[in-house]
Length: 380
Image (cartoon, rainbow, N blue to C red; front, side, top):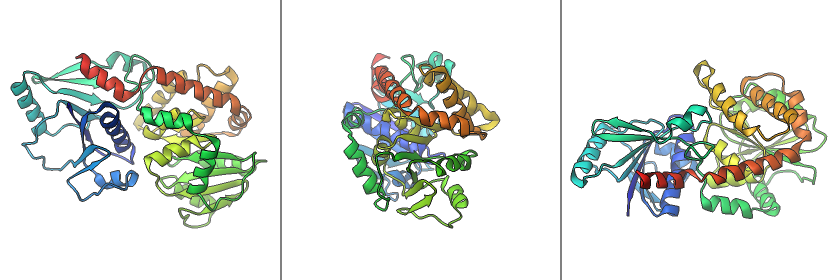
């Protein structure tokens, strides 16, 4: 059985480990590979997979071997057949030496891949799959993306099958399980999920929701946006498991969810607000309308990435609706007036739903990241 090693440094929040764990699990379970996931911060990993024991150096979960990436790397750990360095995390020098030893002993070097961040920018297609010489080894750059010239998005076959089978009654049961204190809802109730960083447009958006003529349920998993909501509601500390009223809005505060439950929450809402990379990708597979808060970068370079994505994502929408959605995205990421764009989005919900379904089908046609990775390693 071919051995694969994935190296992950948890830089900020849970996106890095979220992506790496989903990839490791899919490679092991859908492609029958011997996968080891090296993680420097097991405590953060345990937040999204409570089965992880942050005190163990080695453990197994869903057939993936999980090992703590120590600060002082043991020199004698042999290299795997395929080595994935995620998000330019830099492999331990001693491990790179083991890769050279492996190459000398086996006449073929390990396949070394740098899995980069997701971007829709034009240059990604030209750089995807290119090798870089590394003192006797080659490191290949592999880019997730949105077209056939990139590596695609992480999207397990099992997840997509479950999503296709998910029903309205499944969604209602999940919402009740996650927030049993929710008031009785009716057919006009809208369900939103909110996973966000601190946000300049949040208060203005909640003011729009507050005066909604129909009930709204807003699911808020605990995270960085919660203190901002606490300030707005002026109720002191908000507690997970509780539901708070803000005009027409019932705010259900959720604990940190497992990845699988978070996926199901996305499938069970009419509109999903997501952030970073991992939840952004999962919202696309949910095939429902979404609003993305991109991770802020210095000199506003993140806005170039946002614009590149929106050029693709909005291309098939009617022009007026595309403009409204673009305006809302930029207000959500920069601040500004959202009232007019929100009113239009809220009146064109069915068009947005169909657009989201079509987008997910388009993504699926390009293949998923794990499968494309395996094909790539077999082609070089």
